[in-house]
Figure (cartoon, helix red, strand yellow):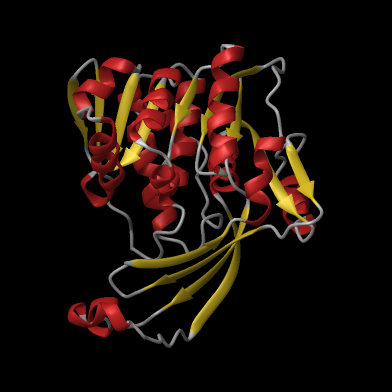
Length: 303
């Protein structure tokens, strides 16, 4: 079974600030905010939700089909995907745009400030989803607004079960639109902050949402995650990382593991457990696509 992964492909410029944002920003002066952060460490990584999720799923042995748009500067990303053995038939180059760019600054407490230029991502709705033999699963992750709306409906029309993972794209949608996403999806994944926003905008509690789909997962970072099914909550224990180095891409690593488990027909709780293990591996490495998943990890997760 293969998965269509709708989302962004982006270049991430990662900067490490050795202090704390809270010590540099004066709350009573936000109306005249003018701050500068010295960032001695800087690097450029391959990123974007579709790329990061595909990287995780591919390492676990799943088959990933990223559905995403690159700009005229995206040739190196295509080469990287090929080098990983990831199929790029759904990746399109938009010649009049730059590839999406994320500028991410992380402080010593792993708080992040991000600036994002969408570039070619804003044209991803021009990539139609078409049924392909072997594709039985999908995910709508953060992407251009039109692409998220259209791909969700295309999954539904094609009868392909999919995960709705709004991520940082959630604020683009109002309550009615988010409700339609939930009604079309089979699973929903959010972090705790996004989960509160989703409930506020739709007027539905986590229990309510779980009655609309096959399962809702709320990730809680170092506290593990909640799995909601038919109104019932199960807390999945966290996995302690060897060290906390860089949180960038942890959620995407988790979602790659989720897709792998769903491809295998696992329970949602088992999928979430694998996700916690993969997230712990990722956070111990810098960059969203520089960690290694050891062989046999998935098989070690109890049913």
